[in-house]
Structure formats: C-alpha cells, structure tokens
Image 1 (cartoon, rainbow, N blue to C red):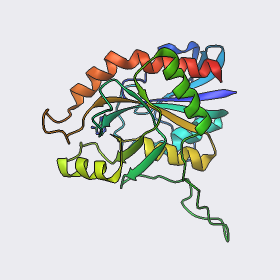
Image 2 (cartoon, rainbow, N blue to C red):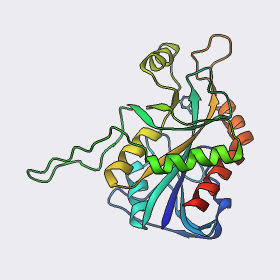
Image 3 (tube, rainbow, N blue to C red):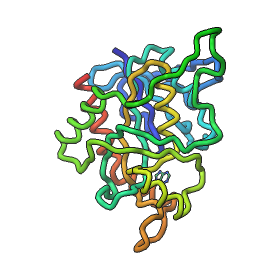
Image 4 (cartoon, helix red, strand yellow):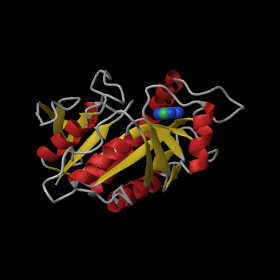
Length: 247
Ligand code: ADE
C-alpha cells in the first residue's frame, strides 16, 4: 500500500523519507505544486508532496489542489495523510496541541473545489460529504497521539477560509458561533477533492495561535505561526511515522 503525505506550512520537509527519489507527474489540471518525493518511511512506500511548493510560493487560493490529489492517486496512493497549521477558536485548544479533524466548514470562494466541472449525461455527481475525513485513518492518528502522550483533541471542526489574509474579529467570532474549533486556509478544499477521488484522507492539525477572537492577547501574525510550528513540528512528524508504521 502506497501512502500519500501532503505537508503543509512548516511541514513540507522531505528529510523524513528514506531512499528518496523525485518524480515529475503531470495531470489534466497541470502539474502538482511540488515534485513528488517517493521513498520509504517505516518500511512503507510513501509519496510526499509540499502543498505550497518546496519554496512556499503557492498562496492558499492558488495551490493546485486538484492536480495535487490527482497526482497522488495517479502514482497509486491508497490513502492520504495531511498536515496543517491551524488557529484555535477554543480556549481549551492550546498552542502546540494536535487536533485530529473530523468535520469542516468550507468558507472558501475563489478556488476549484470539485473534479466535476461538468456532469456526464444523465449522471450528476453529487458526492456525499457528511463525514469527510476517513474514520480508520483518524483512529490511527488519535492512537499515535495517545502513544506519545501528546496534548491532542480526538475531534475538531475546521473552518477553511480563502486567505491569504487572516480573519477580522467579527469573522472569528462568527466562526466560533458556527461551531468551528480551528481555522485554516487549505484543508476543506483538499478533503473535498480526496473524497471525490475516492481516496481516504485524514489530517493532523497543529494549533499555532488563537486567531483574533481573544481580547487579552494580540491577533495572530505569520511569524507566530512559523515559530510555534517549528517548535512542535517534531510531534507531527513522529505521529505520521507511527501511523505509517501501523498501516
Ligand atoms: N493557519 C494557522 N493559523 C491560522 C489562522 N489564525 N487563520 C487562518 N489560517 C491559519
């Protein structure tokens, strides 16, 4: 079984792969955002893709999500694990906590979020999306967090915004009222496409900030996200390696 890994901001480091080789893959949607790095982790075949490109040049709106998912499926990935930094919309989700997402709210507006640009005659494709993240993969991620004793949350609803700007306070409070637990700029789109493509998909999210809903601390900025992510990246890597070992 080949496993795809999509590395988000701060976790697009290909060093975790043994015997890496880079492969170029083309898709009907153009090239993916990075070359695919194939190799092995814990004796399993894996393919790593850097969501925003190896030099982080693709903005959240311009990540080629369709090409990324298509490319991973094309090279034979039967499951996709992804990582992402998220802002916390809940007091109890602290900086450095891991959240194993189980739901999303899609608040994006300017991106291709379906493979179905047109329907086959008399065959509309309306994909069920009630529980979009793969439960078996989620269970593996939760179990790995428990194994290491990391502070984590077994569930969480992510709201994915268009970005690249952060939210206003009014938006941040609205997302809280809607029931979102964390916020980011990529996961919903990627998850939708993986579900449409029939590839089980799950995400380990790392909370890096409190967005801007809290009045007792300054609003989020990018430097904070990078600092907290770097300090805690090792947790995400070890969870991924452990899950892959158990798959
Ligand atoms: N990614 C990490 N923190 C975020 C935030 N506060 N808003 C949107 N995306 C994020």
